[in-house]
Image (cartoon, rainbow, N blue to C red; front, side):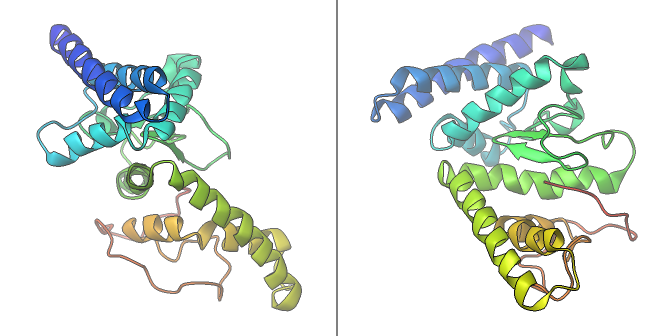
Length: 242
């Protein structure tokens, strides 16, 4: 098994380096592209992250090594953060192997109680790797949507997501001043900046969790934008995805 993992790490690292170098060479960043693709490929190969049995695994690898390489570079930084933590950030193998993503119980966290997705990594998953199927679905049905959003949109994703956060927060402040002063201003701003963010609307809808608790009632979209990937067997407590 170790030999197999090592062989996959070498093959995926070489392939990622070639793809990354070729993709970024046009921008004068050939060698950084080689480094990003090779390190991501080597680590992902060793961990058996990509699902080579399905077209989505090959597509994920290709996008991570090329169009989405800026996000992959950011993900490599978060891997380093996790590596410095006890038990390497609590890497969750059963939610990562052949799932085209890396999941950590701790890792790189910005807001307590919330998961965060950076490139092909998911952080702050806590103890969902145990027995809570609903909490596990926060990764498989919500955060995985963010992983693929980043792959499809590449370097545009953080710009669009962050731009909505800034404009939405400003809009929330205006909404509070005009007609929602019965609510804390921070809550209204959070609803407009985070919960009504189209990327989050998409992910919460896939998670069968729209509208989520925490959103100010009466603001924004009422219906899910897409069908959920799966439905919980029974009502579940609220989770805090990213």
